[in-house]
Length: 216
Image (cartoon, rainbow, N blue to C red; front, side, top):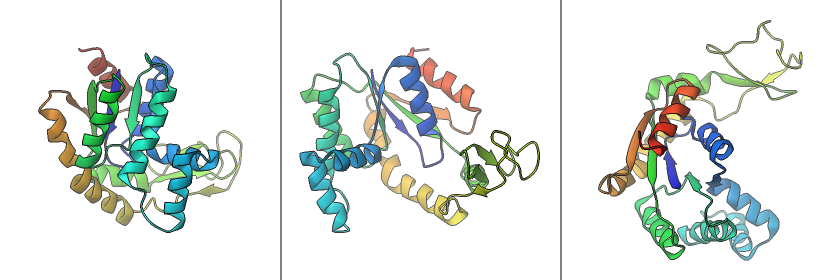
């Protein structure tokens, strides 16, 4: 089974993809991770990507498509793929169709994690982690039992990601709506799009995705 997980940054795609990996033995294909790995490994595609990035340019669709093709070729034929962060545009969606077709694969589901923008801003801007062990917390939803002290390791230093601010989150949302959301009609015509409330509890989101994959 091959699926696309869609949703703006902070919608929980990474968490849900990891759960699918654990439950079904699927492989998460995240373009960012694949680029870093290919550059580090010094593959032919990685060397091309490295040169482009060092020049301060955006990696082309052609390079990303080659990366995905390499990853699919390295997978067992019966292993399913989760496309995370790709495709982002209509041309990439068309490229993915060609990549899958040449390898005898089909796209089974496109699952969009829907979010409320204001709630997502609150979710992202309120999160922080223990500087020592990395345990995650939130200003509203998950505070340490003892204020200022990590529940896990007892550390008393915490940090926030610099891009976890309202302006950045809203910019990402606007970019998602402008670039990624328009690919949905391509898949809706084929009847393979399903939507899940990405603001629900993580386990509820997982169960909803499982129901979609199982045809319920």
